[in-house]
Every structure is written in C-alpha cells, then in structure tokens.
Amino acid sequence: MSRKALKKRPITIPQVKETLEAIGEERLDQFQRRTLDYAAKFSKVDPGMAETLVNKLAEQFELEEEEAVQIINCMPESIQEIRVFLTSGRRIMETSKLERILAFLDEYRKRE
Image 1: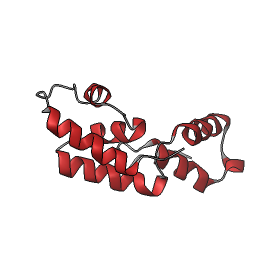
Image 2: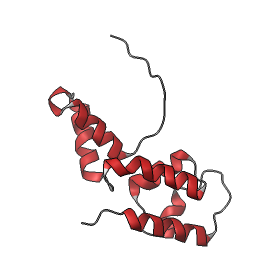
Image 3: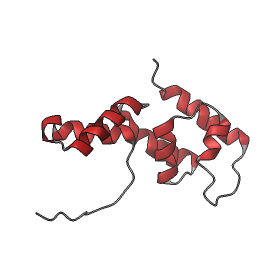
C-alpha cells in the first residue's frame, strides 16, 4: 500500500510522542518505537500545549514556524541558546525581545 503525504509541516517532539502513542506501541515498528522512546525522554512540554506554544511564539514574536518548533523542542534557558535557533538569514533580534521570549518560555517550562 502506497501512502502519499497530503501536507508537510514541522511538528514538535511532544507532538511526535502523542502521535506515536495514539497509534499504539504494539503496532509500531522498531524505528517508531525508538522514536517514541526518544520523544518520551526529550519532550520539554506537555503534548497538548506544544502546538499552542508554537503558534503563540510565531505570532507574538514574529518567528517562522520552524524556528518556533525548534525553540519549543529545546526550551532554551538563556538568550545565547535562543540565538542559536534564530540565525537562519534573519537580522539580529533585539536583546529585549529575546528576554521576552525567555520569560514566555519560563511560564510554560516543565518543572522536574
């Protein structure tokens, strides 16, 4: 059976986890099980919140969707870490804006 992608878009690690869990671990192949294990270990926010956070980051801080996804995947804890995700040919973002992004992330960060 051949499958065709209807739409291609970036998703967060928590969304990958949620999707694979919905399929059911018993139906996953070895690669998918390893991916689920990775996603479970490295999800930094709850799956239900991930898409909302991506949308808020993109809208409030004028980020590309891909940038917002990567930021949510890693949940950087410093301005220097945030800058790593914003180097793709864009102008340098003001430090005050980066501080606001960091404060935004701190509101939603999973507490261990």
